[in-house]
Length: 110
Image (cartoon, rainbow, N blue to C red; front, side, top):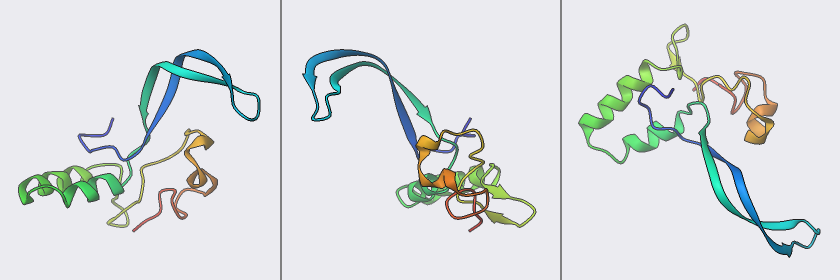
C-alpha cells in the first residue's frame, strides 16, 4: 500500500484490445484499448513533496507525518530516500532499475 501517501508514478497494462485493421510503418497492427489495468509503482518522494506545495499547511503537515512514517524514511540515517524499495519491479520502469539500491534514482538518500 501507499500508507495514505499520494502515489507518484503509474503504469497501465492493456488487458483487452481491438485491432483497427491498420498497421504502423514497421508493420505492427494498430489497436484500440478496450480494458486497462492501472498499477502504482512503489512510493517516490516526488509526489508527496509536490502535493505539499499545493495544499494548506494543515494538510501539508499530515502529508509530512505520513511520509515520515513510511518506507521513504531511513531511520538509521535519519534522512529520506528518493523512493521506497524497487526490488521486484520490471525493467520497464526505466533507467532507475539499472542502478543498485542507494544509487541515483533507486532509493538514494536525500
